[in-house]
Image (tube, rainbow, N blue to C red; front, side):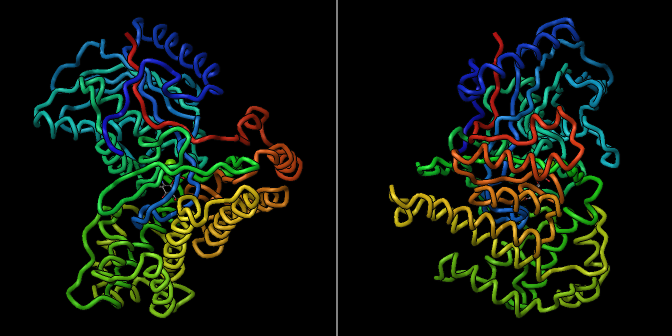
Length: 512
Ligand code: NG1
Ligand code: MG
């Protein structure tokens, strides 16, 4: 499903009919503001959406497939290259945001050879810069080390809430990288290249992320979810939901608990990446024959649980499902300490020194913790990978296809898997929070088939698989039992609950 990012000439190539009117107004406003601010028209607009993850949480950086879909909220960047070039081996970026109060305009000179990013500062343009760094890497690879990037003027409008679990960061990084490629004359930007540079460069901003968000943002196809796989290489394909009665839709519900990975990484997200990587090395050392090292792979720390899985089951005839079931049992026996493992215990289990352990797993970003819960993290990963397979088989195996009179049962089966994911995120992976747990409970009681956190967790968003005829009842229950008991700004309430359909991924809109 690779190929170039579409270059389109009509908004209807990007949005659904329902979204078109509002989006037309928004795009025109962006172009008018661009003209007013920079005194000349934009040349093109690049666009990438946010995403919601349906199932497969916190397993992308362990390199297991997950099933996100793109949503309507997105990032659009109007761009021109009219700005006079800078001197002395630098080029100039003038960047502004339509929301100037929250995201003040910036101007910077960038050296041809190096994009500097200060990841210690929480600064909105860092995500643009990370896209810039990735795109320049691609351009240099293609045209040589002395490639001279064009100066650019950029105006951004983003509707993906920041820190809300809908992947605003990936939407900005992928759109920025795309915009920079196009501004520098590329007419066919390969989706896989774009996704890969966005993944690697987003890590430069302070989070050791997996690759699901960037893949969903770039590759998604309207009307389908996206099965995103990371091995043997990054790939994605559409997955369709069968027609059911009542029709299924996805409700995205904000908790308004903000979790910022740049700030809480050492105890939340980055720590989980470290725990999973340590679990991979520990299981590999204990269960694979001596001399069979973990492969160096696309996991953020260079190794992954999937790498161990492949080592252990090399040449096995068992199905992936059977392999995962075996791995769950093996993990329970091999990683028996519920309370976790100290660095000394992990190092001795792997057979390396504590210094080596720290250098390998704990040096790219700071992490805090006395005990590393390798057992729980590995168990979540294996059970969640299984749930993704089961979800997929419900959707695609003709043996499970819903018959006209059992679609409710079918919907319930899909929903139960999502509910099991929520339980595992809450109890085993410890990435939920009381507010999300409460929202899931309220939604299920009001008729949701499946309710769970989506994205990194510890706040942010939840996703609910709901029958179309229950949307209003579930909304009313959430307003009454959750939102009305909290202080939530009226403006926020408008986007608190969104019913979303799967949307298109990245595109470039060429203006004349
Ligand atoms: P969000 O919630 O969008 O930041 C994060 C990671 C994903 C994935 C999920 C958990 C980033 C940019 N993305 O998503 O790669 O690991 O958490 O499944 O950090
Ligand atoms: Mg993010």
